Length: 429
Image (cartoon, rainbow, N blue to C red; front, top):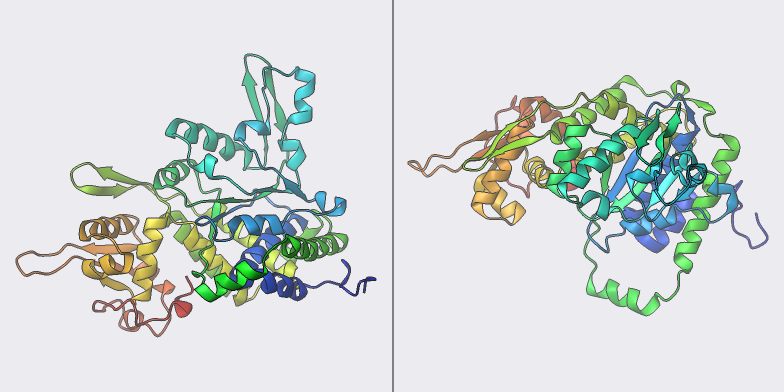
């Protein structure tokens, strides 16, 4: 123990970090911090092929920025692994600033500074909400950088410059909900960015009163940062960067199959859907192969095992992976999918309208969009018989349902469901 009676960096466990974070910020924020720690600790894995990028997404005040702050370095020893970058543009990885001499550019280039570290950016909304031209340019740059093989550019003022070779880093960021048009751009350039939705429960009046009466300093943040940094420091003393053989951490076949399934869900869920001005949803493009996403999810699972002090994966590691998979699907599609799963795999347009709080035409459009991805099927209504449109979970994706769901038990045949019949905790979304 240290002089003040608190655990020292060499003694603190993940359970003790959890206790500190839960005390101040609750379970939802702790789970978000835990997945961030897994991505930090995954730097210890050697043989990594891709940069792992996870962006916490949520409305203002939900805790996404707090999560990033709790993961920031508070000492020199952890600054070796955690680098805070608040003001960020993809062009800064390899600079061509016209007001700098060529000899000065290497000092301001971001890529060599983040190599083998985790970059922390608490506000990425400007990156995801730029105009279409800037979005395409920014994500084209990120596509090259996040492959981890360096980045070489050319300009009229400084010519060809950049970095070749292994330049891997991980990245944790935060943003308000991402617009659909941004997902369309990302779908065209590849699935290199994963998301983690933070949607805490609305606070009761009594809880808000307690907050107003007791909150007054940043002591809570400092205490949590200390616990997190103690844990990170202790981990890298035992497991330096690029020191752990990834294959020495066993992922059993049944867990690997689930990882593959969730990677497929991300690839299909994010596929670009084309729209017709008169008839709405028209058709979806071809989903990107899930291979890259499989590797990213594998890395996160192995980071979770390192955090827990294990050398094998368990089914508990799949809980945050499922959350990441759903969070990485565009918001409107995942809202329909969640409602569909809560209802047991089948919904009418009236039920989607009620579940999402939207108009009937909007509900029908969203049902068609999810069906265009291949995750669901859409059946048009019949005005002659007053039959409404229906959306159902496609057979290939019925593994998403609990085993006791009637749709699963009846071989994919089920009537319209009630969104209130299956507890959300059983669905796990």
